[in-house]
Image (spheres, rainbow, N blue to C red):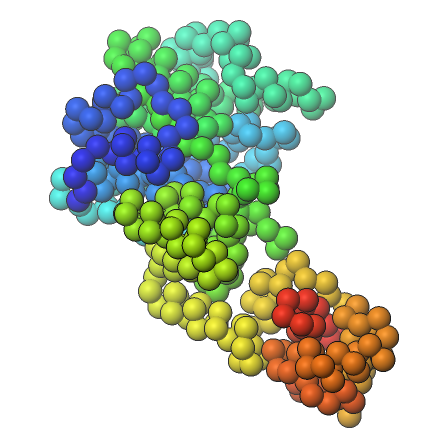
Length: 427
């Protein structure tokens, strides 16, 4: 268990976006119970959930008691925060199925058997689905004015749009506030954490506890992570990067982190690893001195993949990465290769063209856009600048057969050191 002040830890890791007055003092005085909610709208969490997961894990390592709410109740309603359109409502059966996967993923980060401060996972469906409407409106709803709710940023943004916001999602703020009150009553929870888009919901819960219990509760929100290029973190051409290996392979997961922009890697090492301040400072120095070596990215990929998938997955991913840029690329799964080269120009050619003696490489290069003419293709081959599946081609009259393709389905053509083109065999 770590020693010291967790608020300082979160601060140097750049994880404190905003906190209520007194939150830092609360964490410095003694042990607290804190919670973060997780949305069960999919059967797996994705990398966008890693920052709150790491926040709870850090709290536990510093001796605090973390609670993860699997939002089986609020997941039936939908949170308007950060949304421009209404969420698809889940059935109870869908929410339950999704919750099972989420519990397993949280268990990789939190210790549920710790002697002094075991983590808990609770499902807010246990209390929200038992509420009666009249009682809730009388006992809870009267403490929220419509003006107060309209002033919340998540609601204001939706009201500016033509679609507006349904009463269903409008009520979400009160339900989350009731969650906080319930955890305060049951477990003495006095700190709610979440993304910065949750600030309005969190402070509503603090206000409700003050009004109904005469007690002080606090909130701390984390930054919403975006890439240096302004793209929402975790979004790729191939879609979300999931924590479930059945949805995102460990290899593709490793590659996602390995391709982190130099401008982002320092923050990500702070956010998503347990490396010390000194170790991250050393990685920063190495990045400044030799960015082409990408040592910081390799460290990031190794550490996060180990946390989510384990040591064996790291070993497999690193071996596959070595194969990817060597002649062993043909041993890899086609989908893994496509995931790494998801932004590379590609064409589809009928597999029949590669039957028998195969198709002339020069023709394929022209079709793929790797050469402007057969003559240029021949000159590039003679100059030693053409590679097929990472093997240099020496014969300008070379032909490609389906047997040479990765799993009989894919060629990676490279011109020079960096210009890649994909050729997919179809039919």
